[in-house]
Length: 432
Image (cartoon, helix red, strand yellow):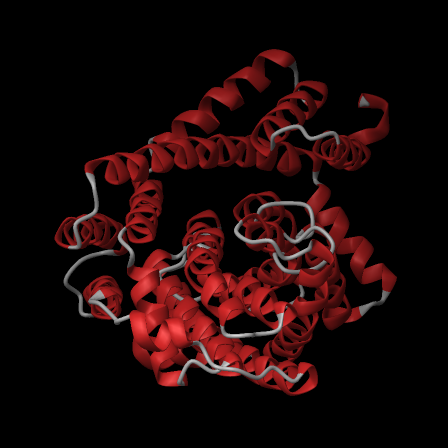
């Protein structure tokens, strides 16, 4: 590859990386292999090993990254504390138990659970286990039931505190607080557009009926107040100047543990939350180390400036570049987990967007939203399989049911591109 020149070596490295991912190689290991190999080709094997050592030390020794496992633990504890069940019961009672109303209840409960957990897959899994049986018992069309719950799960990636927004801020050295604020309006906009899509789908599919089981047997518990307390504790602490975002992770995890204990969560469930946190955090840190090593390779390959030159020469313009990036995200999201997508692509795409004159906070919100859409895009969106695993609804039915919500997300992307203030207004107002 040395004869290809730095830019050619960089492109070859990207092609090899795509091939490794297509073969099922773990993202972190693929990034390390390509970053290490590419650096060895361009500079030498010994410097490449030193770069890998430096990447590992910088990542694991960075105090900012210590907040990642804490937010993951907070979400894992929330998922096991039964908060999702109470949120859905409260929202469903407001809906009167009607099928179309239950779809809206599922979306509203997903938004509340997302605000407490910060994880899309955890939100989709928890709410599908709780809400899907009730929605089916009420006579909700299977397409509407599965589609609304798969889509509602994606709100976890945007409504703060969000692990995805946190990772973007840390990788791109942006303010965590500003990223969280920037996600509030797009997250609520997504909820509103999903509600409109659910109402349109309910009218189209003519869902009727009423859930006697829900009306008679289910009583909202304290989960709604618990979710609200957790959200206000974390977000209010950050913006009230009580603690930093890193300290907010510790406070959120401690408060989630306290709520889990108050709500009678068993020791086995709590230990399961800690095991899940360790496993997911280890995976993420391997990806982070790989992304750091891969970033060094991209830097010495001079691929980013070359891409900027090629984009300018292609004459597609700044918004043509954004459109191409969004299409790539929509395709990639069908095959890859959201956090891995962000860590893999942001070091490549964010500099291109910055060179085109776009605000990094706005681009982060746009990228995370596009990743979110990929989670529900047929045929391979991961949230679709999460919902499928919790019920007996055929995958083809889930594909059809999620299409109105995919269209709603495409409308949201268009609004974010047309009106950047949707993401930038709140950080500007509260930081001034």
